[in-house]
Image (cartoon, rainbow, N blue to C red):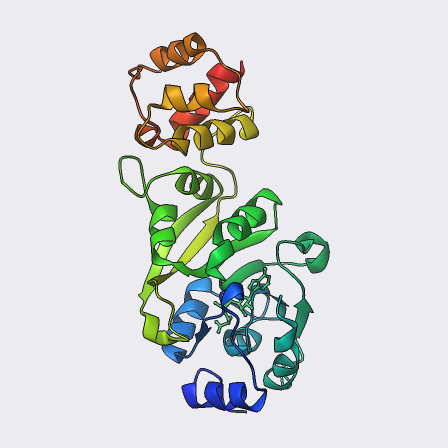
Length: 284
Ligand code: SAM
């Protein structure tokens, strides 16, 4: 079968199956072979690799993944796509399609204890980008890298450093677990239908060990979230107003003093390392 990255083949396939795009599932299918090749190259896939693809759609990128990898698990929520995938992936015996919501799948169980060289590759449904990425990290999926298409703004937030307007809780969370690298910007005309936002491919390479040491990871992330909850407020206000944190103003001010930071400092000025120090000071 000719590849689905040829837009004519995608159109024929969609007509043949009378497939109706579902906006609520974030369905924007890739119709550009060059973009897919870029993603495959950035993901650095070999026949030793096990790939988890989130949302194969009609199987456009899955065809390339199956050719490059040893094994592909493709989790798709929309059951209307199953008969399409049966046909478009018929010639690839190393692909397993799972009809489920990725947020409900026990990925560690799906991959099994023996899965080696796991890599996540996906053109993500944008409406759930953050829960998907955080779920992969927090559930300790044994993935060496995550190479995904996301909304351009989200890619910028993942890569941003202190002081930038894009810097926030997502930047810190991603950078605690992985090293982000924006591979390419992708224009809307590479998709069908065209999304009304810009897109970018980002590769997140898992650290073997987190770049900072912290005694209580959960407390650090609670502090990060609280600090960025009220963007224009000071970090101290954010922490003192967070319903799940119970530090006095004095405790926060003293911790900041010990770190040589002014009382009026805002969350966006602190590095990951400083959040780790703050968490250790407050949690002690
Ligand atoms: N990979 C295909 C491509 O590049 O052409 C499709 C990408 S499309 C942006 C996102 C895909 O994710 C859709 O097929 C959509 O049905 C699927 N999807 C949406 N929500 C999902 C979820 N919660 N779990 C699994 N798949 C989901």
